View 1 (cartoon, one colour):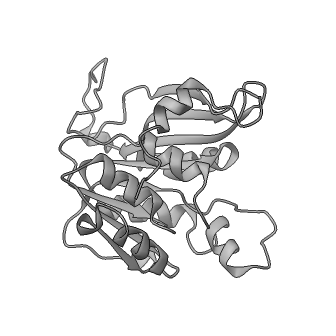
View 2 (cartoon, rainbow, N blue to C red; view 1 turned 90 degrees about the vertical axis):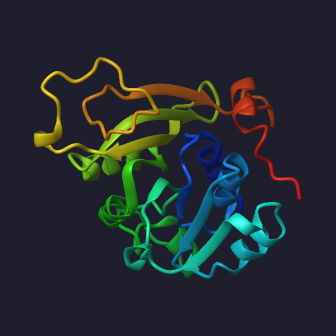
Length: 238
């Protein structure tokens, strides 16, 4: 799958903190999101992993200014091993669950949750995420609700942005950020009223931050100021 709006949105929206040094892009494809993270975090090392060939991602990284800090591995994330956990994990995953698959095996792998069911993605994040780390994902709105159900009690939603293509259309995508959910024994009796994005402790008691983003004005190829502000720095220029 080539560069698309979903990848650009996630790469621009995912929160990058100054202390984040190790980042992982699950289902990296062409390496777009991995390169966007490298662009945004000058001190970070970014790894992209994909079940399919990562040759194109490597070519794109080699042609970029950040080739020394980006690496790719062809491997199912279920089998991916790392000596150190990651401060930030992102994914634009395959998402169709019950829909008819495409005859093209490559498009099926990229779009349908056949090789990466939501439960497997959740488990990979829990295994690879550092304490205090964050996980950001983009999904269609219906699949986002399924993913939230799969993550209940394991990953806690802390931030969500629903994305409309135009003001008159319903939200088509959900950008979501999670932390590891605290076990009941770890939860404070009186949780803080506010939990900042830079808090090092995992927190599942805070109310998620919810917002909305409209991509287009409804006129042909005319983006909203909010979308332009979010993405203006991330159209890569080699």
